[in-house]
Image 1 (cartoon, rainbow, N blue to C red):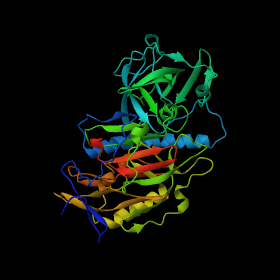
Image 2: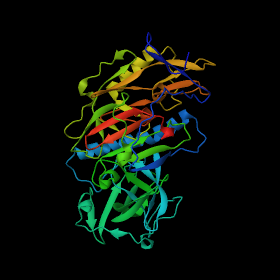
Image 3: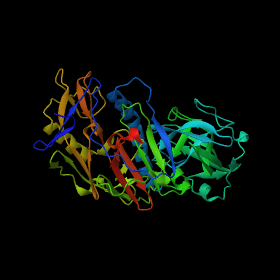
Image 4: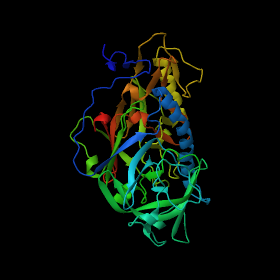
Length: 437
């Protein structure tokens, strides 16, 4: 029997695992990429640590719960008429990207975040700065640095700004991390591609533990301040390797993000726009199937409301998928029913649904899992939702429950080229061996 073998009669996958519970991939189609635009290599924040796949998931879940609360807080703030001192944003993500700033360029790592817009890094002179592994950017040493005026369109695009020694911004990230400084213009370099006149936050007062992995953030949201919007490129994509893989993931910008549109493996669904929360990439999720069973989830469960509440976003910075509680309960119940193993209720893994593996077991059967998006039935490989560790004797569903907003996390996006086409307002999934890009 081959690994990840689909057994029609049982609607089950058979997955094999080593002591670290590795699962083999399905045969994946390598997309044809148009040779324009630029690419950036991404490194997982836990890269280089001696962790099993399940341990990496557990670390990500801890970060993800904080991020989930901040994402939900953003939606609640957007639906409220009350004023706040500073915008509350999702904050730290799961992937780091290398870029360079200034002329001459200085290289640093920043957190990639599809849930926010502002690009920022720490700048001298620092009133307060957190530790970073590279030198803090000194704008006085760059010939391409310039402050943006308070009347500039991008200054006006800030959620909140003030005008003193230039256009000043302040962002709070909900976990008491924050950045405050001047909005400026600078040349950013990605590999061999240099992009002049990019607006960014030059942060002189930055505090909290949320950004210790990198020296700032690169926002890839849908708002005017994001890298995507400033480059005026209608397409970008990313391809994330498995969470236990030591190889780098990839971000593709511009026409380099295009794929062979004739591929039958592409699944495309519309992007939904929320006036109340315009930075997020919302998708229309219509249902979920476990095995051959289409779950009785109410159609309104994942609906985006006019006030910005509810809905489902796709997010690279959240590890596992979080579903609205009533839908998650149905998913958990169906997996428990279809998997012929005892439920592990020890709570040792930090995940909600786990099963006890038989002693010495080297494989298990799990039901197939299909997300029914508008116009696209996305069937996930088993390794994208069932994570196990034979040393712990457990296998766990990489999903959790939420109230209100739902999130399609990055574990479910492993080894898929995820293409955002902002001109067509669509998002596409293409199974891809991401380590070969």
